[in-house]
Length: 367
Image (tube, one colour):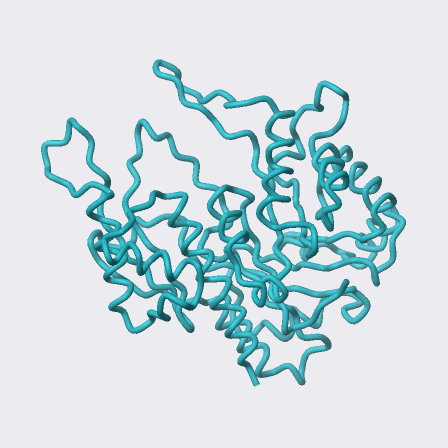
């Protein structure tokens, strides 16, 4: 397929909120993005009296349900990257298949244009599943390099060895250089890009990072704050110096989420209402307070009070784009008018929906 710097590669968790956002995007946005979806492990279920959670379903059920969700929410017309990062070490299914192989089989049966993602240090069984898919599907693969990969004494030789294993050339490989939560100093960006081996030969080249916080603890309760989008500032800084780089990368980020999963025991940690809204060079975060429990002595506002209030704060902020900007913006307006409340899943979908539309517009409007 291939794409250039006018495209966008959001890295998203394949969870209900993010998938709902993909389902609701306008066709113009859909055509301008290729999502990289990280497949989640089986969701945990917390039982009273137990210290550790148990799986809420079997891996077979989870893989089948995930495949169905990908087809339902993204469709079969546009390609997407699929990374089994969180299931690659799981036990084989009852039929002997590696879980990611089973997922790719499901997607193939649904005629989905999935492109498997691997890295430089994945399980042998995982890479074997991808090798089979590369041969069967003919869509190539996505190679995701991480920060530590650049510590190699001979990265180019390792890359060549990996591609030899998959039996594929660089022209059929989408390279994603993912710095995750590391924000590189701007003074190093040109050198970092130019140090990547055989830069011009990859089918596409994407640079990703994320500055969104892991949690909301540093944001005051009942406030609205602005956080710098450092990954966007870095990319635009690099773009302003594109005459100095061998190849300008496609932009990528983690939308309104942190790269690292936050493990929460719902019996111990309470969620607080928050709305995440992407602006030009900043994230606008409206945060409420911890949701109340029956045993609380301090009065706290429930979600049905907090979310409409937070939504109204967003619509009154100078970052507000109006209800017609995206599905997520329309939802915010409805809640600000007191016509909906939503929960954590819906608000992750809302914020992601707005973010995708916002980034696509920003890239399209660049000179």
